Image (cartoon, rainbow, N blue to C red; front, top):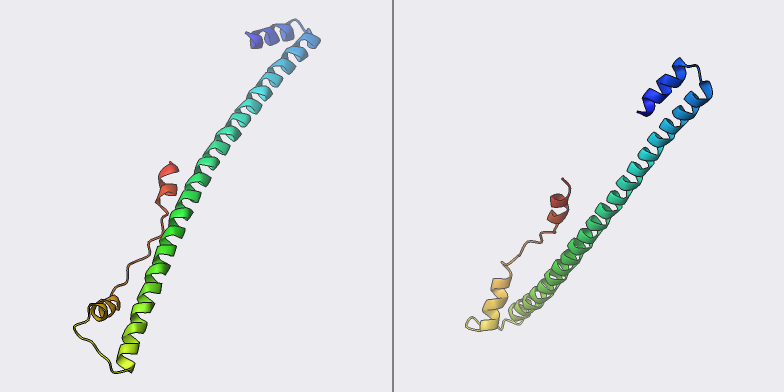
Amino acid sequence: MLTSNIISHLKNQNWLAAIIDFIIVVSGIFVAIQVNSWNEGRVSKQQEKVILEQLYSDFSDNVDSVNSMALFHKNKASELDYVIDMVATDNIEPTSERAGNALMSMFQMPPLIPITLSLCTTQS
């Protein structure tokens, strides 16, 4: 409707009215583009917040995994020190439960698998 007004004003050579109509159309398009940009920015900030929350959760889980792995290795080192002392003092107790557990711990190595999956599922 507005474009037909512009064409009508141009046919009548009413330049002032045609320019005003043109400015109205251009400013309407500009406002629409600005509103769209604002909305995209708002959605982008919401997605950023979700991603940061997931990263925090993943990092927290990874820190817990690393801490439990450190505790495991600390216990393993203690058991291996026991075995080394037992061998160094030539005081080997083959029937001792602690000696058996210490020897078995030499062959245990749980894997450390960092958590990175939640980020992959949100970006689609």
